[in-house]
Image (cartoon, rainbow, N blue to C red; front, side):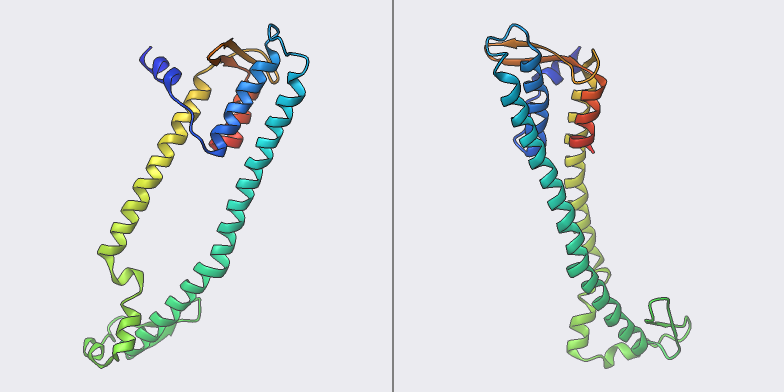
Length: 205
């Protein structure tokens, strides 16, 4: 009972995912509500609005995938390559015996490390090698901690939203919604399994 009350009182957000979820249930409920006075004109307008929001959602997902792909291609791949080259030069300087790894970079042979060689590095070389992320473990761990906590917040919001959808009673088939239209808005009481799957695919996943 407590969770049902919490789900009922949970307000939707304002991003494109919540807008699509609202249109999906709100417009379908209005279209299927036989007692509505504008039932003749409503379907086309509401279907167009739902399709328009769906198009924006697909565009948003496509844009995110495009940005992630190109960040990996033009930013992170270059940074990783630069770090590999810098560390390869560092290993070559600090060890007397070397081997090549699968990326063609120099790696020192265990037992041939010379700590005194660190004092012979130039100031510029020290600055570059100390900018390698794993050379500053405390800073790296702090950044990863903040990033992880932010992801946990997003995961919690996503799972809460998914539970709200799947907690609804499964009713009917196809694009069916069981709702109560009131002057204050639409109260969704249940929906079909297909509606739950659409919401999960386009919003939760």
